[in-house]
Amino acid sequence: MRKTALLIPGLLAMIACDTQGEIEVSDTGAPDYLDVGEDATLLWDNPDYRPEIDRFAPNGVPIALPLGTSNAYDLTFSTWKGEGDGDRLGIHLTTTDVNADGKGDLIAGSQYADGASGGDGAAYMNKANFSSGNQNVGGAKGRYYGPTASNAGETVGSGGDIDGDGIDDLILGGRNFTNPDETWKVNSGVAYLVQNFARGAVTLETDTIEIRGAKAYDFAGAGVAIVGDLNGDSYADIAIGATGADDGGSGSGAVYIFNGPVTANTDVTAADATIAGEAADDGAGARILGVGDYDGDGFDDFAVGVRGNDNNGSNSGAVYVVTNSTLPLSFDAADYVFYGNTADAAAGNQLAAAGDMDGDGYSDFIAGALGHAGSGAAFLVTGNTAGAGVKIGGVAKEKFLGELSGDQFGASLAVGDINGDDVADVLVGSNRFAASDRGAVYGFYGPFDYDGTTTGAVLADTKVLGVGSGDRFGSALSYVENVDNAGRNMVAVGASSRGGNKGAVYLFKVD
Image (cartoon, rainbow, N blue to C red):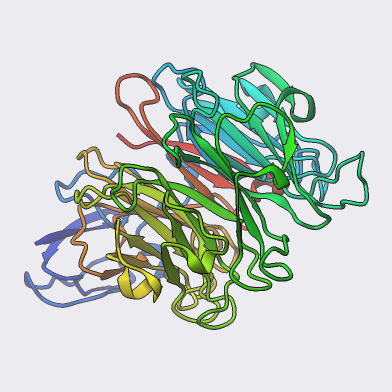
């Protein structure tokens, strides 16, 4: 039996029912009560009485991230703000431990760090413990600034030790980079490998290892990731996506694999492996994720999301999982291939590692499909799920569906325990929720049944809305573990268009 709580001005009514209860509320705020077990929906005669918190935890205590909160500021522990108008801070987020102190640190990408379209780009890092209240990222512990018009920091990746020094490293992508020494290679792109934590301002061109794109309009760095140890040599490996590369046809895209350690500046032609997009105009390489050991062979694997794949209709999308066996020359030969269900589903627009959620010994992942059924969806695919060109919606063990057409539910994803029961939960961002693109983030509590059930966003256990019109709250998500060495965790949410497109990152305590 589920308890549904209604917060009505002047009255708190608790109605127990085994399904969603139907209560007709008059404009006086007085409800008509139903018998236990009656089927119902909520009908509000006067929208002024619509509750701001309309679901409670089973014990009657408000949940960590209340459903229907109208203003993210009501709940935040800390808010990071972009340095200047147009920066778009919060376009991407990642978590790692930059100084090996056992606490989770947070890195936020900023697409246009100089405040102008086509800007330089930057990434900002703060170490745990985090300060509370409003923070301008100009004072962040680490500030990584890209070269002119590169968009460095639009994508950020972390999660492994590439050089073997015992400390996790970072990788930043700048897809619009043009090499000043080879100006004919317009927008060839670049990735920057940051292997030692440095306090203060860091110039990416001079203080990091640089991996450049090969040709004009390759857009190398459109996706970047540290994908784990693919070849079992105890060094983490990196993947760089170039969405404009022509290896599999014009605009097919490609992903370049470099086995760690990487010790000197180079370009993608020196990659240890190149995997081409399946077809022309796929644009492979924008989303890359180290998923852990997906197939159970003891080696790390990685996934690539390609929202522009057309196998089941224009922009139906695809997700490829590549295991550590001989890397394929093209993604259509990947070990596991999952296609979007229908045209415009854009499956693979976002990916998130999920650990072993169902406890079967294989690593799982979640894929977004922000155009699925118009509203968007997220699909939980459990490890070693067979896939040879199958529809992702047909094999996903849990499915989450957005509320309204155009919400872009699935724009961001994260997995972690948000209600303190030591069971992994799923977070899904919907960065264009509501006609005003305010944005929202939904939380779904585990454990799940892993039986292919579809759960609508209206049944989420938690929902937090953006602060204002056009914020695009939910642009990015990251679960930050152990921020204080006492096991406290946080959720970071990007709102890349907040405050004159300065962008913002909100940190929430979740247990």
